[in-house]
Length: 259
Length: 325
Image (tube, rainbow over all chains, first blue to last red; front, side, top):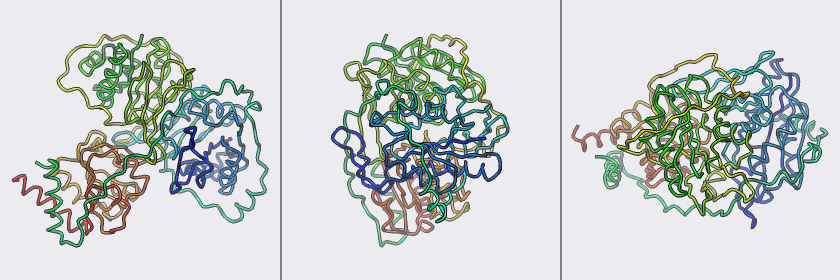
């Protein structure tokens, strides 16, 4: 059984982010990390491997050459190999283009489970996994709080409004997991050293049998502005709890938030 | 034809809040391009309730399926209906079910995708979407590329539109042709109810949210009482949900719900960026925290530095006193 975990390199949560003049995210400006929610997918895949259900865990990333670092950081946590799809034709890729490229790479890798994080920090449509499933014509099992596998099927536990459902689909599938699967492990020093020496596979768009002319983004950003500055808060400090409660109630009443 | 379609999820025989909100959005956008709103209904009760979406704003409704199956199993009929109808846009709720269907639609037909949006407009017959991106660091506007297919898929955040009140009318109902799809293979093998009384946060006008500072499941009792006094509901940060003090359905933030209440009262929540993305659209934010440097102070309108265990019960009592109860 083989899992391919898709990982995305994103600007660190704390990094300053900016758009370049062509309204694309300036990915050179900020410190880059593995998308934090992808680390849960990595953790889930490694647990399944440790449980003996999965033989091989391979990482797949699409991005600039520097995204190789995200693959090495993933490999430092565990796993067996990394594939980077990088091509100048992919700068500014949108959901559709990203999904097509990942789907083509996954076709080549042939996993039983293509596993992804539930969303990415730098764009939050969360549409790529489902689009990949549609292109590959396999079932989608998204938002799993846990992923389990049998010989021929995958199951996820997914929240519903009052509890949870167990969803099942026959393999192969595309699945995504949430941050409820368990805290991602830290890479060991040994793992980091080994990951540095690991050979990564690099594919271009042509290697995937895709024509760059077919990979024009379907969406375009036409404006990017910082949000309007928020006025500093009114602060209540250094007063007793009775006084604080009265002043909060006054504040709410002034805004007609209490009857 | 310049219609605007929307996903209309049904549960327990009724349209969900998201269906009623998106009907209004679709009707607004359709009016701007001389078309009508078309509902794409799925979920238990969709067939019987479809005509009733006329009162919400839909002129027509196409029923994709109405079994108690996972929402994604309606993807096959959805793709065929959109292919046949060719609407300018398909609005989908930014919920797990809505995203599943939207994503499969995008991948099946190769469509431009946007969102979750905070506003959608029509400009010269083309859609223009505004969204908060990079965890709120930027507001971007996006449009379909000139070469893109004519239909856009748009995820819409909860609370972007308000359901129509007192509407009347009946929508014309048709049934989507059956269509084979790999998504039909997804099935529910088990369902567990953990608590039947979990409030729908997306619909709440007032939310009292507790975080790590609340300290325990018992600590949430004071928040329940404050929420009851305010006529609101209780929510939580990831830390509180992870600790098991409240069910995960009440988690607000990047990996939980995204809410847009009139009042968000954050109690003992430090305000990590992952929490902020779930509540930054709230109209008024009040924070109670004992740490004067807590990041939540940066995006609160009223920041109260003090002990929540002392302040919250007194605030509840004060509100009840003013209400005369």
